[in-house]
Length: 377
Image 1: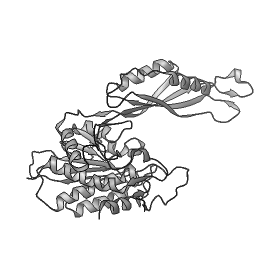
Image 2: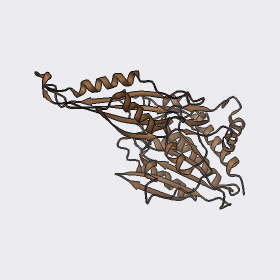
Image 3: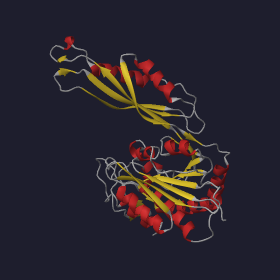
Image 4: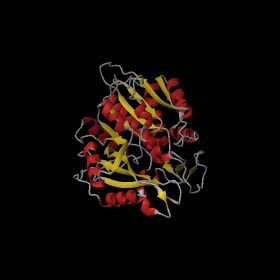
């Protein structure tokens, strides 16, 4: 099965999250890798969800493996109608369409095909390969976080990691982190015909939203990732139209740069909003940044120059969103790049697609990077 066929097969599994239900897709990939000689371990969690760890040992037991990682869940389809069946993977004008085509079933497929090419033929690699495929990334890296829990499969050591998120085959050496909080406001309920007898929690929340809109994030701009951003994404409150609401809440999402400390950031938000609100942190993902002088990064750019030409990756790409690397990179303690065939601008979009030429090129990139980094015995 080539990368195009495999991407189409993966798109055929409806893994929209929520609810996810990624287990059947994960087990399909596990079967392919196991048939190719990988030792596979599946971690089941929640209802019909799973993570996969697949290992191919290297000839040198002391050489830590290269990790290739991605996720198999996707975001929901949205309300706008699609012009194609989002789970069939049709190809039109050199573009493969479907939910997850860019984010990021094409990346998973390219990694699997590249890994199987190396393990099915040719000399044995000096370093081993570890493939980690997760569920639940789209809703806060739920699957990756499960891999940190007691009793989870041992991820083992890692010399470096490639995350297959959509970059259009550009090499990224880092992405922003995320701290998201729920801001709770309290009031006193009363009949809406006598609002003076109550305290309106929604008004307090609205004031808080205005504070956030004007709030200045104290952080230097990062040369790769730029400046942090802040956004209010949700607001809710009240029980019915004819009561003064006694509770309301809104969410604040801050995309952070490496210089920022999340505890200090939350404290500064609380100070700006005032003592009469409470803050509940529900997403806490650190930024990821690898030095451009790292040997693994230098290798990746050298390989890209050979495979794609020097104009394809003139400088590292900075990414504003977070990925499973926020969880896995601190755990593994290894240099990390983000590199995948998907189109960044097509992630989460109606009529999502991946360019077929970039998908095939990603296989060549991954294969060449495996050879360059893991090396023949």
